[in-house]
Image (cartoon, rainbow, N blue to C red):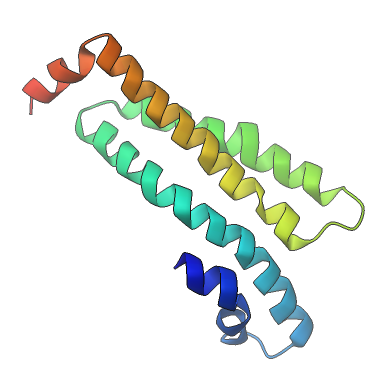
Length: 124
């Protein structure tokens, strides 16, 4: 999905519009989205694992932090910059995913350090 979206976003956008300006803008945004596809594939595995072992509160918190502490503010900040593009605004999504991935890896290390991971897995 990354390769198709990053390198051929214009073809994907062309499915929905024939307007060259819309296609160019959508392809620009899809480049940023493509970067997010790489990170999301990893941190979704973590969140599925955490949900499965009953650590749903952490999943909720990292999702809220990613959305409201990174995605929304970065989108806004990028939108008010001079000469901004949809690519720049779209970078808010992979930035959010990077934070969420860091939180997921950090939580895994914390669980292992405190021997809580073994206790959770014994229950399943």
